[in-house]
Length: 113
Length: 113
Image (cartoon, rainbow over all chains, first blue to last red; front, side, top):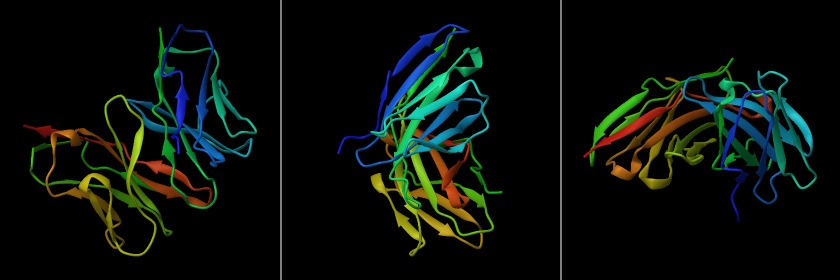
């Protein structure tokens, strides 16, 4: 079974721009979660989508948004980029039923200049 | 509220020596506990998990962890480390009924030759 894939792996943007990151979950997984990882703040939960609906949301500003498609693929969008948005963005998928295990993708490294 | 504390930000250890990475959690309800590993420039990989049953959990790459309910700990151990174990290790606990993961700050395992 293929693992979680994320595209692109690396991105460089400038302040004020917007960016869209993509995540394809493991086949059969209906839940996709997004995390931001930085050296200062560690791993922080952004949001979780299950069957095209946002199920949980972390404490991030509205500039961070996401969506999930009927095939469970998910996208995350960040608008009006700030320098502090530079981070590794990780996507994780799971079946979404009960306390099952999250499986992570390799991440997208976003650098904001 | 649940929280996870990884007491050591870095643990240096000589190759072939044993290692213990400490994790304590706070929770008033039953928990599911996880250890993930992150190799440089990669996503997170599940090492092992405790859901129920035996308190000694064996994982991949020779790692094991012991769930201690009275001490609210879930320490990770390996009897003999290898240079390839150089990575950052994250402890996580399920949060409430929506099964979000609460993460520790991570411990960097540094293997000295």
